Image (cartoon, rainbow, N blue to C red):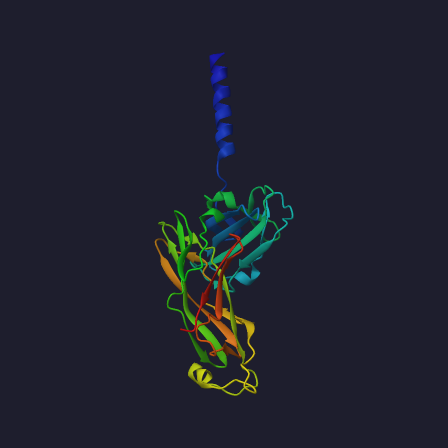
Length: 304
């Protein structure tokens, strides 16, 4: 009887251990070509009652034949293949031919209302292969770690793994190629860990309260604009609000271990320039935005 009880206990224990085991962090896309998760991050936003999943994975080719990522198709779903009601999503698959022994990365995120989504992951090749996010130790972040500030230099977010800082204390602007360009605004990303981590990068935006330069002549520098008389019949020029038409330098997918990167951001305002009638004004307004964290910090930059 004791032997029977012992055997039953061993079986129960074995089943328990098997049931709690992690799924394998690897899926075969085709012969000798596999995908492996490198990092998964969830961001919980209590204010908006939403959750974002960020993921970084590698595609590796161990075969003799090249693998073209143009043939790669994947979506984010759950293991029951249910449709997910998303509020935001992005995925990057580089157009790249992977030769033997090489790899490339896929990056993306998906956001949805908090509704207890279960076992999300990457589904490849029309749901023939599934790589669950819980095959990797998922990192967690929260909007509670975001700091509100209107300063030109501050920390936007910080936890035990990642620090995101903003520095516009040395911002400047020039006029070139028929654009006012606001420069030298930096977003600093610091990886505190010994592992490669995914980055929930900020998406900045900016406006300029200034003068419409269309049909007002050709200008080669900001000094020319500053010295030009834009008055009409003794009246000051009409000002209006312009949105930056092109924003560069802000996209960053991941950081290697203990790596720090200063992303230098530029904002381009086509056919627009500041109004120098009152040099004490602050015509530039910059917004540091994050849908995942549900936050947008704003600050102003003056002419002097």
